Length: 145
Image 1 (cartoon, one colour):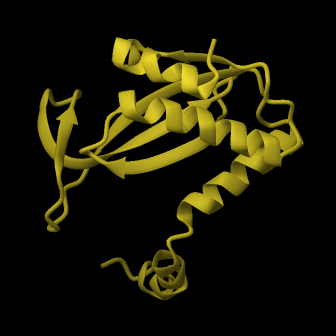
Image 2: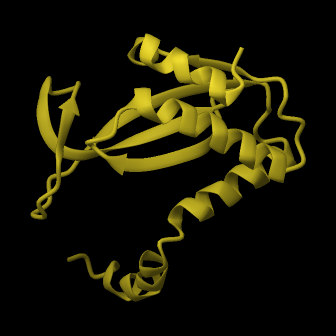
């Protein structure tokens, strides 16, 4: 263990136990919108696999860089047209982008409303991993055009 790490471990333990990390990320998103750091209107959605090399037993996911399954998790992001992220989700590797797109859209709208933004006009863009009839059928429930 790094000598510089041990004094800080105690500081983060209560936050981990409260499971408030996602709420904190949402607060950052709201502040980014309020301050103009992030612009509403275009939402690019993507996911990235984060390999895990530790000793704990966790699920495996597909690592495209190594082209094989590895232990790890997924980071799901929603960013604006200037590539500034404002919605962040860290999820187990058992979850995939196709199922997270509606959740990211709803979370972005919720963050936008709470930041005082008119959320009625939104263009959503995602890569080929998200193109599926399975996604577009329920998208009507999300009020997507």
